[in-house]
Length: 97
Image (cartoon, rainbow, N blue to C red):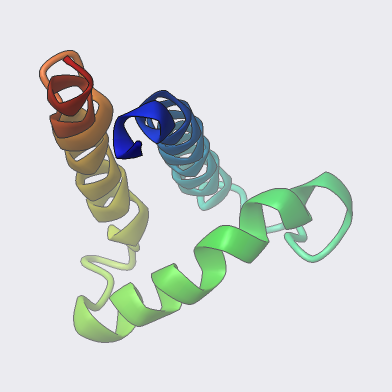
């Protein structure tokens, strides 16, 4: 019974983790352009899921040389989770077999 939900879970997690990786990558690039207002238009799609996580990271790890490395840390964490869960040898793929 549970095995029938695994393909849906695999696809959903894959899409969600890919979106988060892309959102943090865009947020990293936007940090080079401080005049971009993240509270307007399309940028809200990037700012809403990343802002709370980045503010927490900023409290734990202060910017180094004025550069916020929070997005880089989260890109690494999300990429690791994606590989562990839904990668070619991921836990969900193994459970589906």
